[in-house]
Image 1 (cartoon, helix red, strand yellow):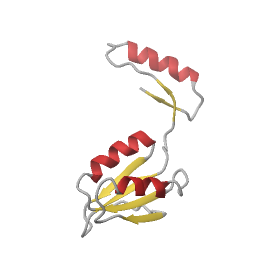
Image 2 (cartoon, rainbow, N blue to C red):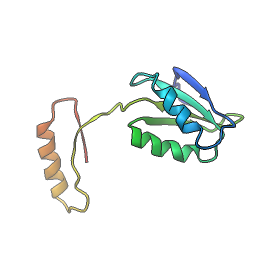
Image 3 (tube, rainbow, N blue to C red):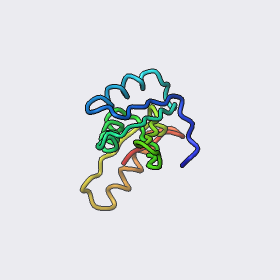
Length: 117
């Protein structure tokens, strides 16, 4: 297991749907960007639900600890460590279009900013 130190541990073992996600949402409000919460849950679809929730809310599921004696441990970071300044959708375009579009986008961003293709 990686050396992740959560600021808050939220034990939701035994809580049925939709309980884990609303409880997680409420608790995440108290964290600042970059802080980590450890969610402990034995809810069967929690891992899939968390991946979808994290993507929709711009949070990150960092790690899933499957070695716990009861339930899984989900390490969730608030916010995005790699915020995107500019997105370029090149889906379905053949080369060299993606390279050319990425080059144009890179000209528009400052050093340290990110482009998502």
